[in-house]
Length: 220
Image 1 (cartoon, rainbow, N blue to C red):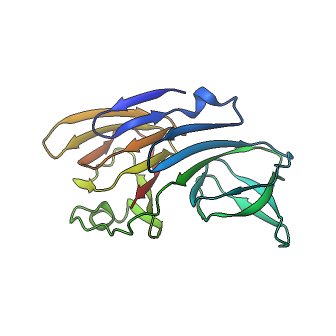
Image 2 (image 1 turned 60 degrees about the horizontal axis):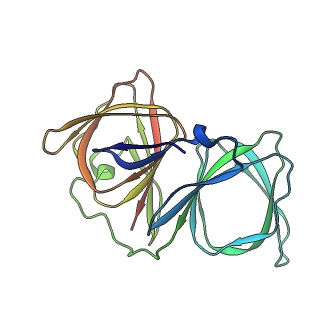
């Protein structure tokens, strides 16, 4: 596990590549979340188990997965796309199996608290300021989940992240961030990195010649 610290953008970062040989691993954990990377291997039927907490699931690669249930429901097959994000409520006993020929990684963000159901009241909410780049995937009483896409050499307006958040990088990052006091920081991450972030106000510039994409899970 590799941990980095970046003053403007994060307090904790974990790189998947450093633990790629492990079938599953806890990437970060605090009083609000537990973030797990699960490597789902093809054609291996999992043991029946349950998840007592609601989760946000981010699928890093495409694949198909079959679920069997102990409550009498018929088995289901789901097809995931790379970068897809799903809400997974707490549920009963189930057994998953990857039925595609390639395995895939899932980032599972387990939510430890019920959430306060807070709305994002700041006038610098990036969804309002820059809706072309900041898109709400879904929102409920526990989380607001954003998909952020910034074009090559794109610059965002000054905006505020008012909640703690988990960021999952879907592409590499090469950024310059300028906070509300004019302090400038540089940040680089790889696709698959996991970031714990606290409230901040900043603008960001994509220094790369490639588009940038992340999923941001804001914790209410």
